Image 1 (cartoon, rainbow, N blue to C red):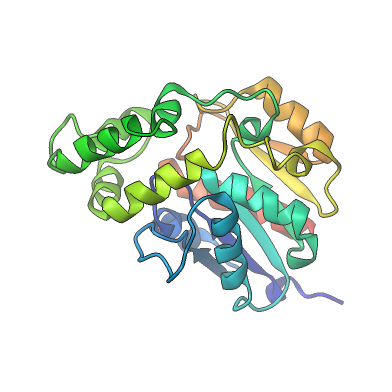
Image 2: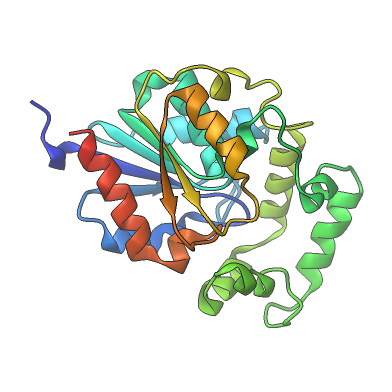
Length: 255
């Protein structure tokens, strides 16, 4: 019989982040955990890396090869979109999955304005160049503004220090590989019942999510839902203990 301690929790970060965004949650977890890195996010891109969502999925799968035991995979932001793709296209690789921003995988989802800028050749590059030119400690820096959606100032600064031209390119590649939205080309990731148990986290203050679309995706996948009351998009740094508790609750149910 599978022992609870045999499981490894794999955490997948989003944009514009690195694997460090999970540090607080990992400190609160009692189970073994690994925070995998998206290629180009705080790291160099591998030789021959094509960029975009399919390449990032393949890169994560390579990292899963080194993870022992059954895997419960947890995704946030773009990490959620990649996690859901892995859980539905490669269900043999995971025991269960949990994601936030499920609405983004809905067929009717429309990217927010800044994402549409990033998807536009020329405009996206100009946006990234302007951000790279703004001093880290400037109150107008994009990362400093994340404090208004619950990111602690110290974490805003850490995220800003990790942002570079490599990450900027990786971000543009991701968004341009998902046009007009994520559902296009990845329909099976949100349109049919999941072969593995799934959980959709719903931070109630997250402006990037949509409660109705999230619920529809959950229903289509046969996934459970869990509301994170009062928490915002970056719930894992806003309240690491609450995030760890939600993850632990979910993982313990799979034993």
